[in-house]
Amino acid sequence: MFDICQRGPNGSERCHVKSKQTPSRKRPSVAEALAQEIFSGEYQPGDFVPREVDLCERFALNRSAVRSDLRQLVDAGIIERISGHGSKVREYSDWNILDAQVTEWMTRYAAPNPGVQREILAFRLDVEPYVAMTAAKRATAHDLVAIEEAFNGMGSDLNDPTSNDSGRLHSDYDIAFHVAIFKATHNIVWSQLSHILRPSILLLIETSNVSASDPAQSLERHRLLMESIRARRPHEAFLAAQAVLAGTASALGLEIPETPLGHNAELLSPT
Image (cartoon, rainbow, N blue to C red; front, side, top):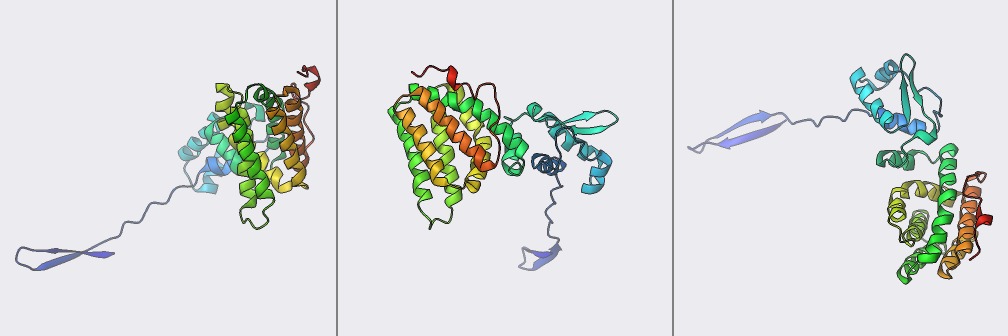
């Protein structure tokens, strides 16, 4: 409550009391809460999430609001509505993983979920060795500088125990290193994908950097990848990228997944 005063033409002042507007509270998001529970692994593919009536009671929302939020998860490919049964979590392969909202949820909530981590690792194992091989063929001097600057940032941060943000900075330089390799392919699709895939790559990098038992060995694997690209040795770049991802798998406590492409280095020409 506060006073509003106005001065009249004769100099007299008239005041009245006005109520202060209370900002409206934002309603809870069922989509956000369920996304956190699904991405963290509380609900696995094949599991049913709570019924609409239970979600209405839990979040104190009407049925229309709950259905609207569930529609967000349906549109993202994360759940499917089954008439007469409820909403079931779909297989990871059905998720619209490149959707901006999905990648945001994944970055924020999927770190504890080894199933999601394994899927991302399998994708990277299929893609990044070939990206590194292409970069070794096409990288320009400018590309090599970008890769080296990111690598040097990783090294300087690793060797600076006084840094308060060492984990975050190391992850930032690490992601910049991989993005620079994608860009060094000089392929418009790979270059654009480096931005779209950034959240999923960052998820593994942040988690594995925290878990890594020997950061110096990880840095050495990245150095070998950089040098193979600099020396224009595509076959070595392919193997070096695989070694980097094997280190990531080890830090996460995951077995290296058997993927259609990721283990075919022997099929490549060494030139």
